[in-house]
Length: 217
Image 1: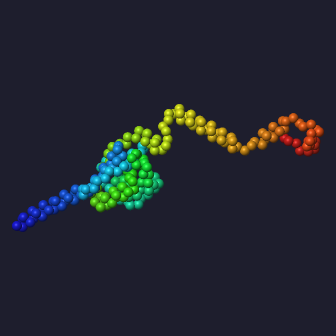
Image 2: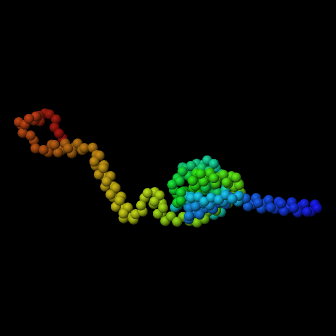
Image 3: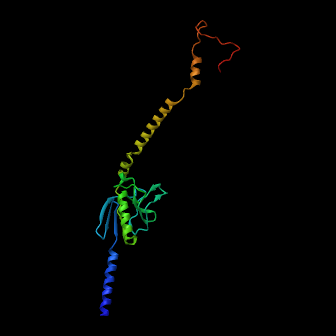
């Protein structure tokens, strides 16, 4: 009987340990699709738009565990708020953003940006299940081709020759505006006055120069 109770206890503990290993949050970031899929073992499932790292600031592919949670965080390096940040590698985190209009295309400095509401939800899930029971996987590469960045910034990609022509045209326009705003050149105007023919001595208002008086130089 004692042996039977011992066997039952071992089986119960084994089931409990298996349940604790399975319990958690699975986060899969598809950088190519600019989507994040979040599932939990208790039945919750979400699929949200993200912004991963733009060109020059690519998000790091790999499988990670959360290293720390920061409800309110501010990036001193890039000067931006990172609410509900789930850090997973150094300064890289999944966090909320106010730039919700950029979600769906690469726009960050390497972090994974979420809508503030979705970031708060993910933060709560990780806090509930625990960092040790949360798996974060980043996979894929951004298929931007710079076209998305051109659209996002409002700029149009042009060739080198076109850029040169545009720069020259802008320089010419600035020079014309500066010329219009320039104060009158009094020295040049005075020279034009002195070069005009002298008025006859009998002309109304004519005042001849005195030999001892001041003269223009």
